[in-house]
Amino acid sequence: MNSRRALNIFLSILALFLVGTVVLLSSISYYLAIDPSAYLSELEVPYSNPPTQRWNASEHDQVEQIPRIIHQTWKTETLPDKYVNVSRDCREMMPDYEYMLWTDKSSRQFIEKHYPWFLDTYDNYPYVIQRADTIRYFVLHHYGGIYVDLDIGCLRPMDQLLVHPVILPKTIPVGVSNDLMFSAKGHPFMEQTIHNLATFDHSWILNYPTVMFSTGPMFVSIIYALYTSHNSRDIRILPKALYGKNAKDGEAPHSFFYHLYGSSWHAEDAGFIAFLRDKGKILMWIGL
Image (tube, rainbow, N blue to C red; front, side, top):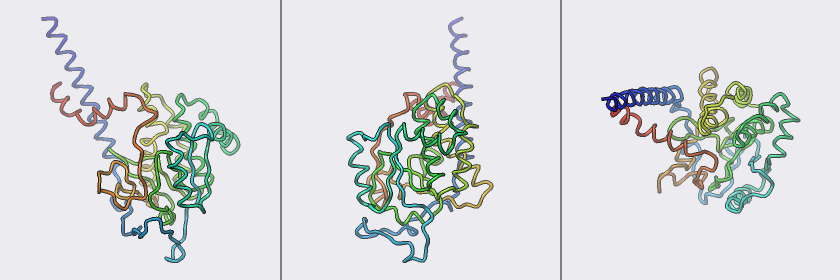
């Protein structure tokens, strides 16, 4: 009798937990939905043959708004072997782009010099990835350019994309990613992003949600939703067909990028949250 009662209590608690999880994930999906008109189409960035052919905005009566600067981050100036060729190939494809590698040391020096008001928050982040996240927002705000994660390789020059003031890639299951970001120098979106970091600096107990919601993709997705609700929609979204991530074979033949998959920073709790996202409704009904 007692064991049956304990089981009922456990199932009730499980049901409440799963209901809350499903409601939360559904709410996030609703509020972070992206307007279809924000997506870049393949017609706006026509595929060249050969794909490595360069593109000049002035020849098409357009003006580049994003500086030709590629930003990347790593602990030191010595990149891991698996990323050396990926990074080098991008730079060789676009030799006229300035390249800036931000190390742990140079990142902190940059924050201390140009954004001293943020240094305490920067130093007190519990996870290294949070500092790696935040430095990309600050350098894009200060210099403009393109931030590219080391596990993203280039298939086409990025010239055609530079005529838009901000570009963010669509990610799954919802929102935008921060592993690839284009921005004009001092753009209001980046201004809003860096000035909201302290506000979102909260611990969610587990590694994964803490990073995601304080400095990572969910944070950027929320700022994007807030920005586009009050400002002109000058941010364009890179769809899977042009971003290439999570695309099946043949699904993104004209993508600008390829991806080396594998999360290097989040713990097993990421898999748990993904499991709840995919199976939460089924488990909720079992619990009920």
